[in-house]
Length: 131
Image (spheres, rainbow, N blue to C red):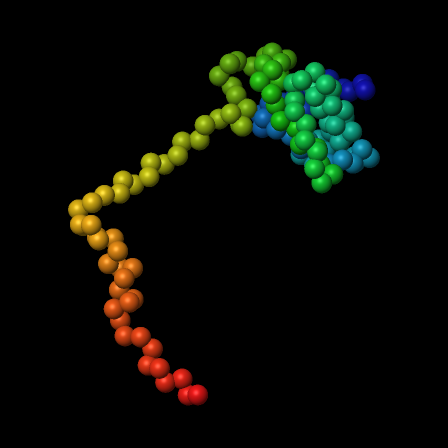
């Protein structure tokens, strides 16, 4: 299928930026929900990339789910003239906040169980249920 170069570049940029792309299975949709190009062009370009092994396709509930492979990342990086430092969002590592350290021991063997067993020491129900 013939696709305008600007549309192809826009699809490639979006795919590389996110590392994944979704498209509804609606070939008559005038515009893709996320990109300002016809949905048919998005599906056909992604179909072409899938046949080259650059994208992995999953279909579920009338939606196509496309994810970049390592070869696809290299291909798009070369096509879009991007440096090696720029990576898709799916490969970016997020910094997790450090979990607070817990103190182990110090309270003896039964240290943490005192609160759990307190309910057993309290008085039970009165037993008067108005039967």
